[in-house]
Image (cartoon, rainbow, N blue to C red):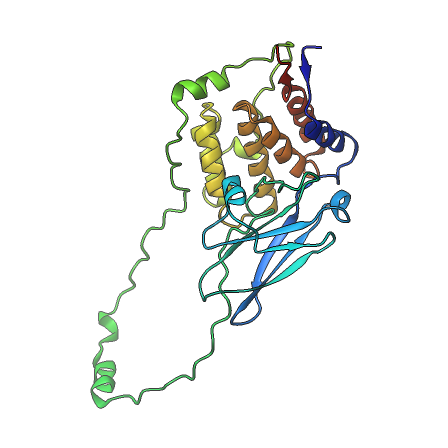
Length: 300
């Protein structure tokens, strides 16, 4: 036998193949201010882990988009299995972001972060205290200025142009040579063929505006030319803003493809698992491909 699977992967692969609901990823995260000092966070638990896995809640003053945040920071709360909400008492009045992950059997967090799925993408502030409104008496000079304005002299001022395209991704610490080497890996040592990049029909035709147009630009600029490191960064940035459910699902699928082509099969599998309800047959093929590719060479 040339390759073996890790215990973690065997368990996760079994979940992928035999039960759609068996994913150690919470979903539908929401955060809402409930008072001047508290925010309530809610989420939906995966059925297979609802009664067995503790829930870890993380808070940050910046969007939580990287697993390094989970590895570095301590959770603000650890809740019992089955918990689907947490009321967070805040240390100061400012904007906060949240992520919710499950605790694995070995006691470590399952640290995959999917923006808008298990991590909030919009900051939430606690409710502001209502201050009595002070009405200043209108001065005579102010009234004169208002009455002296010539309506014919007024003209509409156009709004400034707002560029809604996602900012270009920052340069990666991975060199171009390294990325090309990852992309050029045509198969593993067992001869398993690699998947052909998949692009949804919606993203092959340019629309005039909106989130579909923005995703189209990312796919055409980075994904199709096989710039997978840049594509992953751009898609993650794109998901920092709330998107429609279908655009979010397509974006996460593309994110899974970028992980796959960069050799990060663990995160690729998790991404495809997250959208298998949206694209059952398509996701199943990529899940199987990720399982076959995620093999550890036997030590010599």
